[in-house]
Image (spheres, one colour):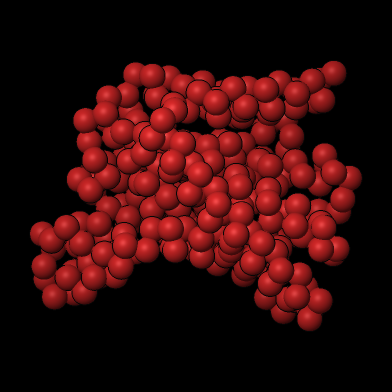
Length: 267
């Protein structure tokens, strides 16, 4: 693959993984829109690992708290804030992992990878994001994120397995509905992405074992590095933006994109 192709893929993944606009939907659309060959699962894994590195750096203090929390759980200190963070992350991750394994085993995940599905989910969940943002209170802080709220958000996150939904978008929607502020909703969504991206990389990577040559490894390393830089930029920009604006610009973008896709599908 050319460096330009890898750069475009990395930008698509890195910039959209944490924005509420659906990275998986954009990655599905990319080959159709650009006329370039599908990047394949190995490159998908590589760009996911790049974004994983970015969110770990961006939330390094929370990640350090989570590692301390594991030690607290092992030593029986379940009431500490660090231990509750680990339990919340586990509660938020279980539903999507179980549902993801089911969809992969039944083949439903592959059947949903279509422009038509992406078009409809892009528009429908734009409406969900707008409604939750407009009606949600701002009464809770990410520091008070509880395992109960995490379990509820984990169920919301299951919807992100449908391409075009946006994992970040649906978890931010759920967090706003539960009463978290916009910036806190984004922080929770970013935290929830860490174990999910790890699980996704393992699932996708299991299908590429033994099929990767030296050229693919080189392409993967380039894509991962570029996606890391793009994601780090997106995380910083979104965090700053949400201190001043609502989710409405992302809602409008999704509606515009979905409308164009529907015109392509049915026109």
